[in-house]
Length: 159
Image 1 (tube, rainbow, N blue to C red):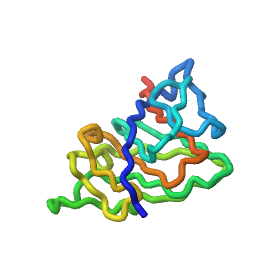
Image 2: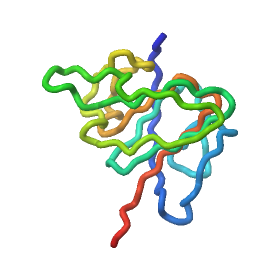
Image 3: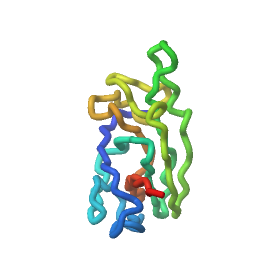
């Protein structure tokens, strides 16, 4: 049963800028990084995140022994002029237990939320899009017991 759950904003940290390069969170500390590589916030009632997305953002995730279940990356671009949105199951996948990986990067034109009030058919999180979601990619999770996530942004390298 889908329930509304507020989302939190993760500010991406630079992926390829020393001294933060290679800083990955451990699944032994479930939660999310709001943008400080030295601090993980416990999930609490939150089961969704928003990330300001410029097309160079990725999400690192790691899980412990509890299966994280399903994750959905919501498509924020409306379908034509219909005012409707692609089902949440369009970008749905299972995350494995005792593993880690990456989600993204995402095209801002396709994935960024463009207006408030959006709802997505078949979503695991029925929270409607709020003002803070505009310009962000939204990602929701079913099980967060041993899941930790951190957003990174790539810094273009000059030739």
